Image (cartoon, rainbow, N blue to C red; front, side, top):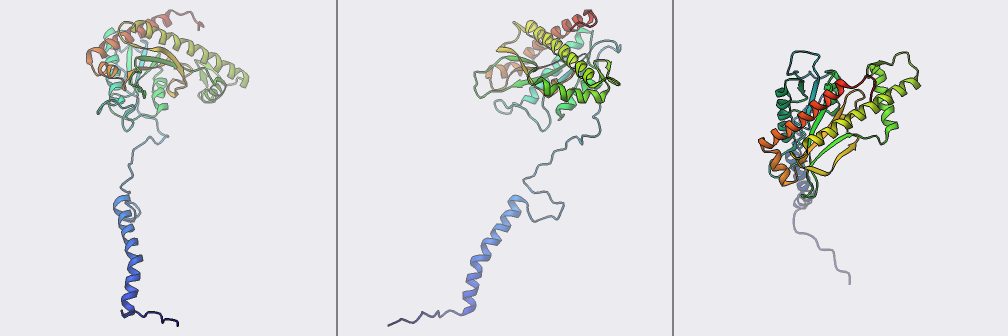
Length: 308
């Protein structure tokens, strides 16, 4: 015998309400979560979600203001541009606690500025003298716009191993030079000159030769600067086991400016971090690098015209 289907004694309206609640309540919970946690669905078109952080960046159109040039008023004196790496919303590498690379690079750059000015022979400019963000192209662009004689970018390295330590000096890598030379040639062609030689009216082949010659010359000069930093710093600072390296850093890609990038130490190494946060050590670091730059500039001044 077939049993009849059980008939609920609850009113139909109560059943419908219960079923609706099973679907509506989860949807409402999801909407509230999205609004509170993600910031979605409130405040109109101009509302910024809670998870969004806005950072002011250069618009890429207007050039940034040039920094002040310090030192002798004589514009014929050599100009050294010091670049303190990172800054602003870009902290760089992180050390123990609240230690950040951008703090160390600025402190080292200021110490080097003071050491160079104390010599009394050169002019000095900093790409940044406070905690601000600069795009990579803006950093080397400042040096080019100021017609600097030397560009040095200061950083502090980091590594997964706490045993990695010591200073390293980088110059522009010659690997992948064909593509690099092409890109630099296009940029320099728009600027009309390379290392003071006019490109206007020259054939593409001649322009390529001029660009390549200038790149080779600046690479040799940059290597000499790096070697002098290693020499003058010996005994003052600890260097990495492989202290002079080459890499394709954007800030080093200049055809008519001797450039180097120095990793003063490792923020991930307790000994290096302790040294870089010590004012006395920074002053000794600055004097050694300043002496190297002074020797380099003296050599360049006495260098025969056309010598590499």
